[in-house]
Image 1 (cartoon, helix red, strand yellow):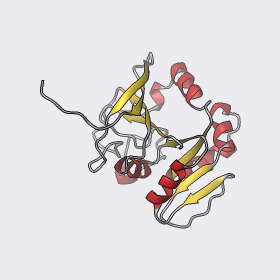
Image 2: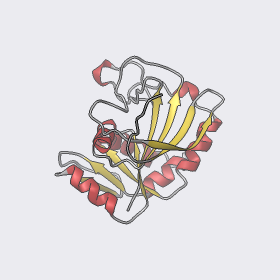
Image 3: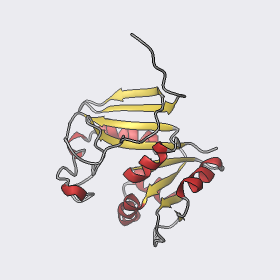
Length: 201
């Protein structure tokens, strides 16, 4: 059984759209692309280095795949990210037949949920999901996420694609580890922990 781990940069109001740059995803007239950049520091690099040092394959939506495939093969000097990304298998989820130019890429199409369950039930390293907002919604709606590795930034944007939307399956998670950067970014890793419990206070 393989773990599916979602690694996401989010704002306080849950926006995950275009953290990396102004042109990353401008859909729905999103104007705040690159909101992560002012908070980059050594602590972030230490966390990312640790998270990318474990064996993993990538599980990506088409848009994120296109962004990564156009960038990481051309920047081997950023070793902490480029080396594991270029080396691992990239599973790409799309409802259409698409070209996959990045070496080591495999298409997941057709009955996507069934294919994802088969992939998860197989052998291999963890499957890391970066970006890929639509794919993340599919995973959460079908209870396929084992862990959430969240990086929460001290800003609100008011609009944009969000990590958690209506229709996802209610689920409880347990905090595994956390830290806070000097710039106020909260790093928190959670693992799936059964059903939601309710009661009276």
